[in-house]
Amino acid sequence: MKLGTVKTVLIGQAAPYTRPGSFSAIDKKAVAGAMTIHRAGLAGDEQGDRRVHGGPDKAVHIYPIEHYSHWRSELGTMPLLETPGAFGENLSTEGVTENGVCLGDQLRIGSVLFEISQSRQPCWKLNDRFGVCDMALRVQKSLRTGFYCRVLESGTLAAGDEITLIARPYPEWTLWRLMELLYYRTLDLPALKHALELPLTPSWRKLIEHRLSSGQVEDWGKRMNGSSGNHA
Image (cartoon, rainbow, N blue to C red; front, side, top):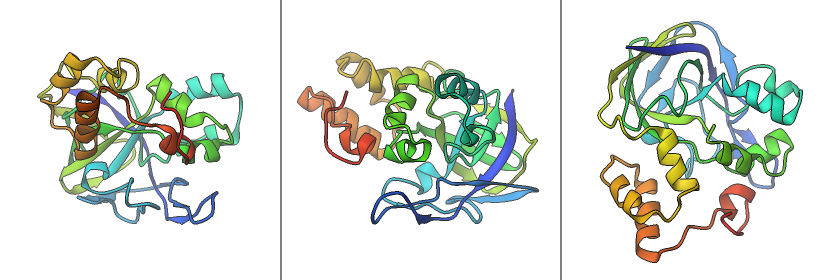
């Protein structure tokens, strides 16, 4: 079943970022023609901090182009939102959003087979990129985060390729539902226990297990602001 289309393919190189000692490849640029995708991601694409970006569970970042109109209405006109790449995405897509795809979905794009591994957890680098002090929190609250895929079968893809749903093993668990649990119904213990039955990435499994064992929500401050602080 066709879900959508790739509008733009983007890659970036790691470079010094906005704060001392920080590096990022968030400033990704569009590329033309067929691109090779392997288990680590797009050929020629880099990550600035491999502790939290990249790796097999975050090989490719997808961000829906539909969200750009929301951000333009909220933030006003800015050059960053005139073309895809504002959120550091590898694939800018149309027709595929967080409330229309599920964790574990297998997607065929070109000759590449992807599996949706998790939604993005926004961090402080979005604050600095947009010049908006709470941009990461805004993205999280909106649930317009984009999402990551792992690569099950390497191959090539290009702008204009269709996004086809191959398998949907967890149809009740849209990314939207999972993010509502993580960011709004944060201590819904029965739902958290149910979520542990999913093929969660190690970091998400650890997060949920911590909430269940402690009865507390993890601190979001370092991720959101680059420093410790309240999670809300």
